[in-house]
Length: 341
Image (cartoon, rainbow, N blue to C red; front, top):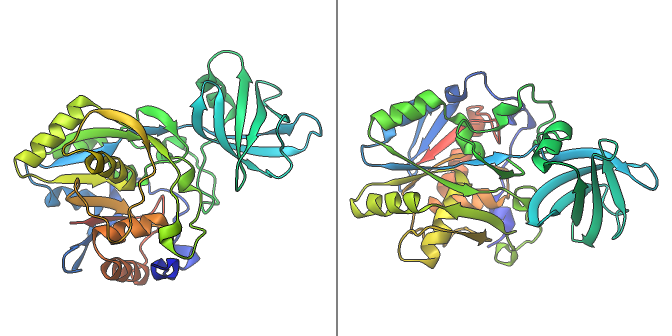
């Protein structure tokens, strides 16, 4: 299957640069994944599509202020470092800009030495393994020195960093937000619970795969980057009960979906576990976990467009995207939402 089959034309002005004032006032395109029918609503209307006994699964990862600006210790040249994944101890996988001049043994200084990062391994495409040296607690140093790592297509500065966090964010560790969840408010979640919709939480820390485009023509050759996930026993029990009673599991975002499908791929039922997943979901994939999906509008030729195409069909998804372009929906992280049922 060729990467060009997942391309579509998006006018640049439709890329949302700032979040809406109220999270749940974004538009909602509702797609019937079986016949391609489309409805146009607002996100706060999503409650109408839930039934008592359904379980909504949310990714409670929290974005780190993981973008740091500093200097090379030897030349004082400026450098930018995006922290992605904790490997072990104080060793982190990062993206550097510019990267080609950062070799093993070289050190970077952030905040006049409050964080020192030493390169211990070179990776492909700007990636490095860096060993961090600092005093105190790393999260406190990042809160002091770091910035929220907004995607490169967002050019404007974010006035309120909390708008790039979900209202239920809890487990710190992501380099990017699970953006489908940005539309939910505390009030909307309470309304869902009042309708006897269950809320379940999983964690998947969004890492390098979010920032890297597909670089192969044949998508069968693409290798997803591993990301850390975990599911509690309480969540596993709730999801198994939901399935047993014939109710639906509705996933919020591609990250929750990848977590759920990873666990169900490897087991006959949901189980409490943690680990690393490099699951790549594209057309032909057999879904075993989810029955509906809440998601945003994704970049052309991205693995995320492939995932939603697998859940519905490439034809229906690209038609829905074309409709969204014609109706001037807002795209990507701070954009509008889609419900696929």
